[in-house]
Length: 113
Image (tube, rainbow, N blue to C red):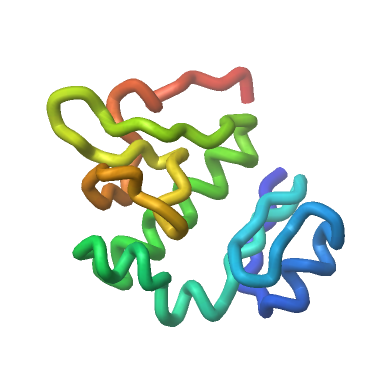
């Protein structure tokens, strides 16, 4: 089961005091904790990269659910399109990639769920 929470910074840290930072969203099974400050304002990196608040919200949910499904971070753009993979930490650094709130073709994994 997946439980998703819109959480204060304190609640995010309390989910895993040694693993979750107050500034970001975090996944600690069975929970996905979306930082409510990020939900309301996104991040400077995302905003300055041309992203929208709706796009940020889509991206952060997709990213954290990706962690819930067992996927790690990625650091390079999709070849040809330059789109950031959903598992890139787009909130923090775009690594020269274009904002992207949805999984790229190579991230359309199957799962045994």
